[in-house]
Image 1: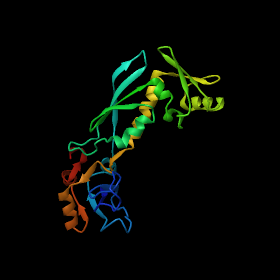
Image 2: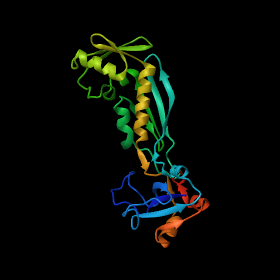
Image 3: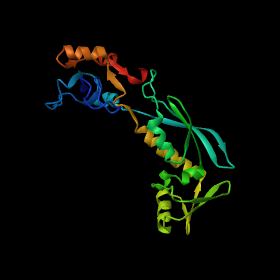
Length: 250
């Protein structure tokens, strides 16, 4: 048997994706777990489910975050420029989880990319490899006062760094970004290397953008049954499943 601690009412926190909402399963513990004094009414309900293991029930603790995928839609080798479409599979049927540019614009612009188009579940963006290698994100600082000169041989970019950083700072940045340092004031990047770094960073950033604390929640009927039974119910596995809702379907 396992026991599910369920949020009985919305938290009083300001409106946000990280706000706890009624019906979300906060924790799953083994049968007979000693819950704390505050883990009951009026803030929490308890569901006991004989026949369901803790490991199985933990599937209902999944957070609802963006899960982006990247598709190359255009490229030009002569300028080493690219257009990608990033799509999130986290947008629900009814529109919850819609990507807004205010949420994600800085992820792309910090990498020197520009937004070409956007929809409720996608962002199409453009960049050159030179843009990525001379971006604030790559350098982990504001580079607006630094000049860069590109020498591109259709495969690699050897980029000369102008006044500002010391030779030692340039070499250290190369070490941090795992790119080749070319003494005294240049570094070399390949298109695949820098594109993969950008995608990995934006992917990780988007995955941290929360849509809801939990993907699954207890239905209205299930919450009513809990309220009518003093906040504690013992149910069968089938009854639990019948009173769970996948937020992706909303």
